[in-house]
Structure formats: C-alpha cells, structure tokens
Image (cartoon, rainbow, N blue to C red; front, side):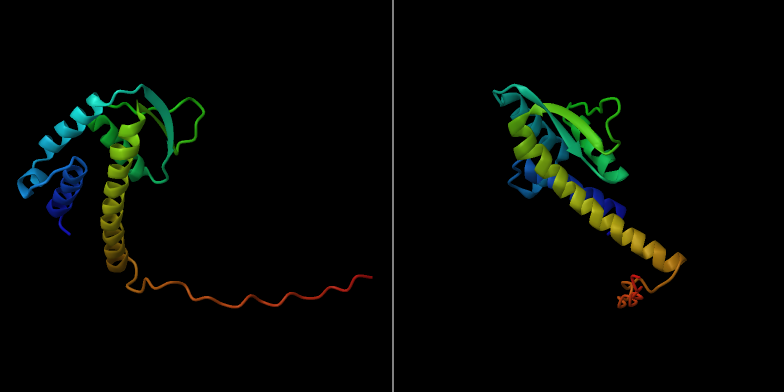
Length: 146
C-alpha cells in the first residue's frame, strides 16, 4: 500500500464512524470530523475521566492525535506508567465513537507498519522471516538426594 493510499484508507475509517453514507462523504474527511464533533456536543451527559493503556509508541501517538482532532486533551498523572493515557470526555462518545474508531485506525496502521517492517528486514537483514523452529527441551539430570 502506498503512503497516499494508507492516508486515504485512514480518512475513510473516520468517515465511516461518522455515519457517512455516500462515496463523496467518505472522501470528505473534514465533514466527517464535523459530524463527530456535532455528535459529541449533542450528548447530554457529564464528562468522565478514563484511563487507557496503550503499548507501542505509535499507538500512543495515534491515540493522542485522534483525541486532539476532536478537541480532547490527553494527559498522564505524575508517576503513571508511560503506557497510561488519561482522557476526559462523555462516556457514550468514548464507547460508541472514539474508541472503536481508534481501534480500527490502529489495526489498519498496524497492518501497514508490519508490512513495511517485514519488507525492510527482508531487504536489509535476511530474507527468511519464518518462525523459529520448536525443539524439545533437554532432559533434566536426576540428582540423587542423599
């Protein structure tokens, strides 16, 4: 997948989560973002604080960028693990829109990054990336108890 194709795919994911119904809407990322922000503003509930645990630097970067895209400010408390991110928002928005969209974007980006890494490793290090062979464990020596 080319860089431009990946960006287009990620923008389509956002449009789908915004309820886009036509091909033209799927391409219009800004309209999708506006619909999501309108949905967030219409929710009649108090924001809550939630903790998310994300392993992997690029997953954290994606989470932070997506939160900021919707006017949310992720944070971390002093002494929290580097894998923890906090976010304050309306529960329904987090459950129905933000988290599912993040998971879809994360999966799509992960597939692309895995493929790029595989291609680079094959080209620069070694072509055989098959799994390591499984071996039987060596037998333990019996030590007599005297």
